[in-house]
Length: 311
Image (cartoon, rainbow, N blue to C red; front, side, top):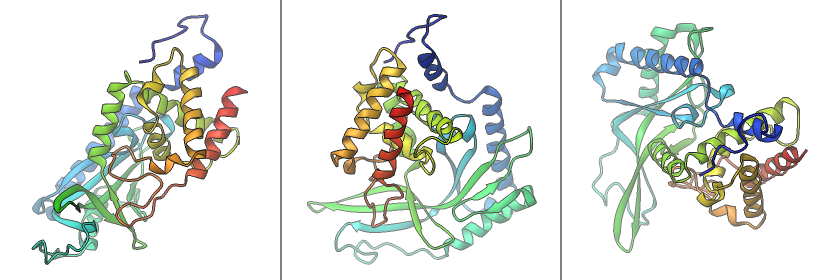
């Protein structure tokens, strides 16, 4: 756990800045996020087709996982149709729908995505834009923030070891250009919360520092900050051992965390890093799907971030 070091007027400028970066978005921003989520839930509930279909809404993203900063105070919601599931046998060699006596889906994913679009369009009209992955619901100035809404199916990932079958349950959706994406948002939330508790709430605070550092570097056109996603930074920080956060100051904590990540990537050990859910590799394919992230891109950013903090 990191205590509040150097409180008061004697706090060094660098430490004062880092401590301010640990904070969540303002209460005003949080209220707008809640309002946006509520409006989307109401829009879906009013649609007759959605009402007749079994679905649930899973909050996800930085806001839900308590790692958001002001510049990313948007809302991410996943609309999951649980009466149908995407099925994967990548880790269950030899198994098929027939061998496991599974029933194939009786409808197409596009039908469900179209229904979600209709429900959102009926309320938000021109303020809603279909994207490759999600529906972008645009903000009303002063009343709510932007929101991304993904239509998804349940996901069952089968695996078999020593003849024993197990199932990993998540969500799956398809981009408009035909790629299947599998995620585990509920596990992500629980694992992130667990690490935060183990580190005396330092994990998520340190993650916010790293995100705000990236935004400042972007604003000043410093280094390799462009193209590095907030999700990648959150996952990278998750792979830093818990005890690395037990430092006196935020400056010390960030210095050793960043150096740890640099050393691990350069040594090739980061290939074993996982996403926060611990259900997917961060830099390797999972369920035959390539990773979206590259360790070299993260390394370039971290090297520049370390130099920026020393300046």
